[in-house]
Length: 405
Image (cartoon, rainbow, N blue to C red; front, side, top):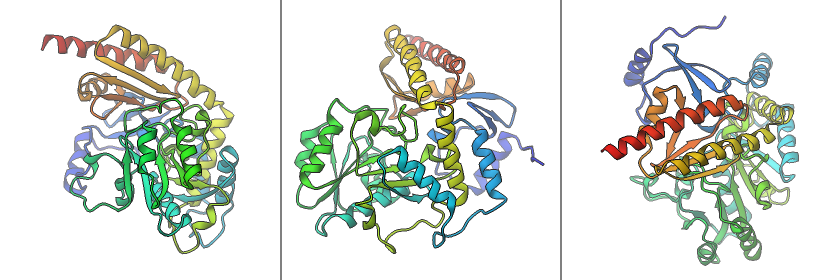
């Protein structure tokens, strides 16, 4: 029997205020149910969610195939340590390998863990004097100390020094600056093929190809952080496939398991043995629940031709939001790659997010001025138009308010 939540949003908030560390900025609403691209709060209000699960809910809320796979697995085997073999983990690794560059997988629980694994691998694989990793301004790689050190945004470093040594930062899109940072101690280059938290920043033409050549010429590993871009989000299984550049290492999480916690690092069979036994692990990594959810997610994307849907829906958002940009001076830029959508404003975006929520639409603001959408690949065209209608109306009203102030 399903237990129906009975607490109001305010009662739940009071519980949090007493017992939960307040390290998140939260909206004053308790969500209790989700289905597809809709969620409901404790008071019964429905919201169209264009940022489901912070990008984790690639298939929307409670996708049926994932729900069924997890339910079935829960009744058979929940968790065993990685000192044993499980069929589902092997099948999951095979599916990821066959849809990417044919390598091998290390499983963990989150994007930051996947990045930590990649950092360790880079240092273990290259000669001992090599430990430095080049990353890029505006990038985001996670919240643990190593991945935070890799994140070239000073606001995430405040109060945490000294950071992990060895990370050097180049301006995003500047190939010459990246090349100038390479020395005899450099082990790898780490980059998001499309910056997510950085504001849906798409790399300049030839930039990723240039990094590939730099890595090849100087004997470095090229690591793509595909935590946000992977698993179909950009209209390819993985974003690198749309840029015709193959990395040596790739990190995955967020959408990987359709909303269940799960992460992975993929690398080639030649590089993989450098992550030797005893040097790295994740207790819950690749557990049967995550593995079954991951398999079901990949199968659902394939069965529903959702890669094609991501491209088609991305074109819809580009057309609708591009028209808004032409009409409204408040919109500085529109950036779209599949269902990674960034609408950059000339003013702060917090008021837009709040007004959208009051109208029953959930969106995100990153970098202060970029309205970020990461819709589910299962979003319908009707829902996409509904979301664009609300967002456009809110921004028009914001433009009027700006003129009057």
